[in-house]
Image (cartoon, rainbow, N blue to C red):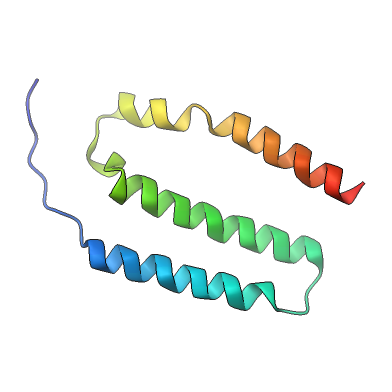
Length: 91
């Protein structure tokens, strides 16, 4: 199998981005908005952070598509489980 060389990502920059997103999450958590809006915003920020971790720290950005598909395949189950928990919370 052929090895493809790629440049190393800026890990410090990714870490700073994750820290900034965490600070934004903390700021959003204390806003006087409706719970639904806060939950949707926090889930969106968490997904953004998870994407950064998966792409750069798990090196999926530099992997072939078949490995990316293998990593993405369980996500529908995660969405179903999160949706079930959220709807249980609201009922």
